[in-house]
Image (tube, rainbow, N blue to C red):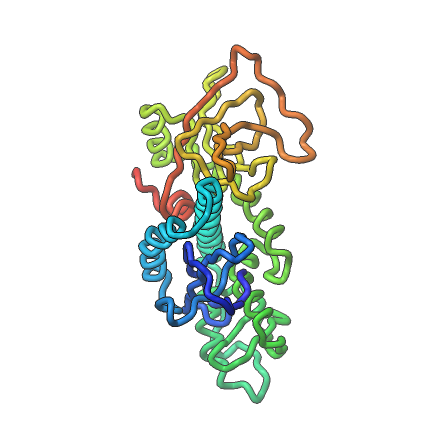
Length: 347
């Protein structure tokens, strides 16, 4: 979650991106990625003089920022910087925007999957909700919120300036502090509680647990006709690695294994300054269960992808040199995991 700081001095804007306003689900504010005087990049909330500050829906916001980013990056060419410095900054900007897009896609499909897991849950009746005697006006808006997210235990009712906590099944008589911190908790609660986790927990650890919970579903996709058709199509085009969100579908032809699911990892050198190298390849010298995609260092060096084990897994079993494989990869764009976990485009 970006802080709400405003640049006090004029700074070059090299990109922009929307972020949901935690206090209001239906509002998206625009943040500018600006180059500070020490040549470091940072996010600042957009000023009215720079264009529309907020949007009422994500689709319009994304459409505008993606168009704007093409032009904003050209600002680099007007700055009095050495060519190598401009290249380094350009790669950092591209990496940060790619990371924002991936983060948005990931959190979007996690929320949709949380919702889908409870679509058949019983909903409370409006008359069964227990509320403080002086807050009877909250009955209808709380009822509407629980029709959509019946599993949540934190409920923010922005129009009334109140946040409630569920004590028992329908007991909402306990109030929480109504501030930006609890607004963030309430937003995360809609995803986390769908997987029996709390929105107040560490968000990074919560998402790691959700990815683990979704891994069996990713494996199940390998048995579904529509998804198998998509992978077969990729294989006919020479693609043996297909990247979908945080999962990698990998074709292993040794011993007729076929398609398997692996998890996507980060470079051991860290993420700072790196951006995805889509024309690169992955060379596998072991049977690790983590795939690191090819990337470009901030100095312009192209690094091939590789396989490895997760921390604490021990060393990955080595392949015989005759069985090393070097493979291209394909990234599926769009609302990735919603398409995979819900609609099957190939059916």
